[in-house]
Amino acid sequence: MRFRFSVSAVRSRAELLRSQLDLLPRSYSHSPFPPPPRPSFGIAFDIDGVIIGGSAPIGGSPQAIQRLYARDGTLRIPFLFLTNGGGVPESKRASQLSKLLGVNISPLQVVQGHTPFRELLNRFEDEPIVAVGKGEPDTVMSEYGFKKVLSIDEYATYFPDIDPLAPFKSWITNETCNKKSATMSVHPSYDVYSERVKGVFVISDPVDWSRDIQVLCDILRTGGLPGQEKGDQPALYFASDDLEYQAAFPAERLGMGAFRIALESIFNTVNDSPLKYTSYGKPNPFVFKNAEAVLGKIVSTMHQNKEMTNKGQAHSFSTLYMVGDNPKVDINGARKAGRPWFSVLTRTGVFKGKDNHAQFPADLVVDTVEEAVDSILKKEGIE
Image (cartoon, rainbow, N blue to C red; front, side, top):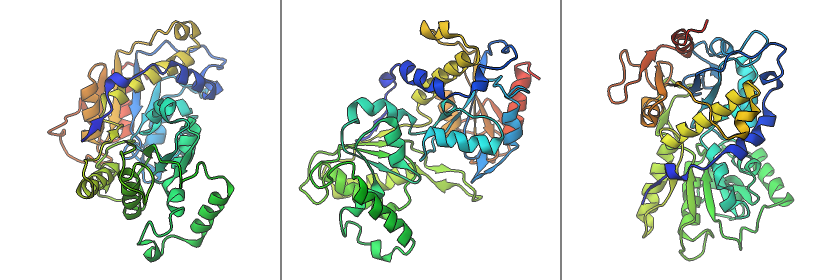
């Protein structure tokens, strides 16, 4: 049985966003120059395949993003990064992008696939959970406020022989093993032998598919306690459902959606009941509604208009631009979200076609993100 995140689950994010305003760069609101007129449009950029390829800028992205700032470094055009990727806290990703692009990016401007997991804090704050994926999945969930978090890397080390292939994995270095042992001895977040896992959160693309599928099947089949009798399946959440994405390699790479398919197929074969899960990320319309709310907060911060924020009035955009490289995800999502979203498709990532995409045609097709920004600013009458 397959569950999707329902738009009806969208709740007010005013309190969360208000708490993030303190993290915004001072240049947003303390410029000696008067702020520009309140913009009627905003921009959302995908990252992989649009802004970066692997770990390097592509498509003139530094020059493109820098055009959205005034000469004194203040933000003049509201924009954010809307990505299904993740694995690190938004603050860390903002810092990485700031260095890469040569501008000051706020954590509020980074919306990752797992960012909506914050909304589940009330349900799982004090419950044992496992975080899966590359990067720092347990750190991400801990920074969101979850108190009993273990990464699947650490969780697996508590169960000897849970991964029968571990002895054959030479890429698991001694340094990694020592790091896990040190983590175990300091402060396990909960007693894994007696407390059942209540939730599994796939934060980013898993690294060791064979181990993670094995361990997750153990957790999900036994009601959250590997090695025990079968029980009710704990909740399972995926930060996104991308089948493929563009990385440094010329051809697309398999993403979290591919891992979900593999896990679901195996679980449904070895278990009596089908896998239940919830997927977030683009092209879910919820993601775009949330991005619009965040862009509205960014506008309010740019213009120091606290009165509007306090009254709970949302900034109204005439146009919101989604700049992406994946027709099935970025363009399809913008189309599903409807007005005021306007889709812009680049040829620097998943899409490399000469003409528009046949199944999910964009409102505009360009070669690079630099050309996308140039077209948007010209369309809006901004030099």
